Length: 631
Image 1 (cartoon, rainbow, N blue to C red):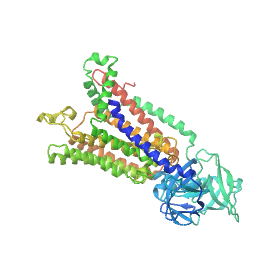
Image 2: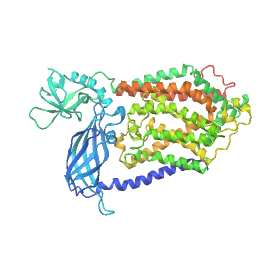
Image 3: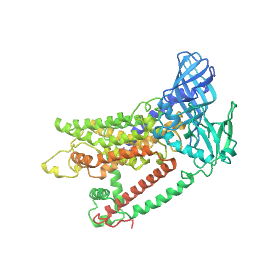
């Protein structure tokens, strides 16, 4: 009965996702096959930013009705590879018999440009479909499509766009071009002069021409003139004096210096990885980490009764440790009562619907609400499970204070992404580990650990049989009073929400590897896969937190508060300051990938080193590994 009870909440959440996907299919897929009883003839303006309204002109629009407006096509971004087969949906309103207006909000901008510090000027090319629900129940919706539309989207106050301007000036100097900024938004860049014998001159560009596009991106600023890393030839759109159409021109960009070439990134990661292996295999672990491993090893030896040298030297000793850990972690992680199972199912369902949040939850849900709910649940458990009202209030105060470093860690995410919305924070990341916020910088990795650390907070609910119990260091060794099913459910809700928050904020959320948010949103199969991916990461974190709780001795709430004040809070403030510095610096893509890949490799090496050290200390005679087992 262990595994059915463990998988029941996740199975219920996935069943809910399946129902949601089935209902959504009726509303999303049906407009494609509906009759073309409306016509869409134009789109204006051609360039927008948050706060603007997109007007779609046409015929046959039913007055006062809501329309589903779907953009299907390709996204071009300066300095990035083209994103194909995107599908972005928005809601419009018929404001006249020949006009549909779409309010361009920040959530829609995120799907076009990305979120936070990754938001970048984007040019959309493709089809725009306008669909209406049929008047008769059960009838197919009606739809019309505008072919070959172009929409230019520039995020307001984008850090990435501002940081790209020096690179654009360097590209202009390399190509031999001198331009003047556009007089108004979206008009292009006027060529003032062309250096003789330059690459621009060889491609046929002359003074007086207007650069309209660069690799498909509408040239609205100098920062838009950035080729894709590793590209040898770029395509520019040129409008000559007196012409009404653009002429494509190929211009050579190979040999452009500056940022490290993309093909060197793998070699750099290999070198960093090799140096990291040497460092972690030969260096003495930090005293704090070594002490924690020693305490964990002593607790494991006591729990699996490896007291005699014969037991410690047996080949099956580590297997017995593994069996004991598996049983203990499962007891810690699995729900013990029906109320706990209900809480797990509700939490899993909450996170399972987030990939569908463009239309339901995530577009309006902010991380502060989730974090405050988790903190409140544990504080209420501290009050309800205490012996007296005073003890309850004191325990709630300790619980609240110990959440402050995690709150600062969440603030660093908001600072990095520029948003509180769950949807936009997810879209600021990618599906691969090196695209997760946790590995964006060392400060982000520290913030991830601080957020996960607050999942270990638990009020003191042990019975004090005598005054000598105050001298016991490991609180879990004292006899525990009965929590009650709903107090246990509140504790599990706190742990589940913290694990889910960490998955969304730092571990890529529901983004699938190899896909952009614009490619994933709006496709039901991919959204359902993203929900399963998010639930899998959340379940893995719940198991990891349970393993740490079962392995490490649990300290009293007062001692944990002292550690929070003296160590965790200063670390959280340092992480916040370093995150602000990282956002201000905004490193180039190659440098960011090098840092992220190095942090992923270093994290794996540390995990391997800790496991190996723990194994050595558990099986050794005294647990005193003065000499590194790697040596």
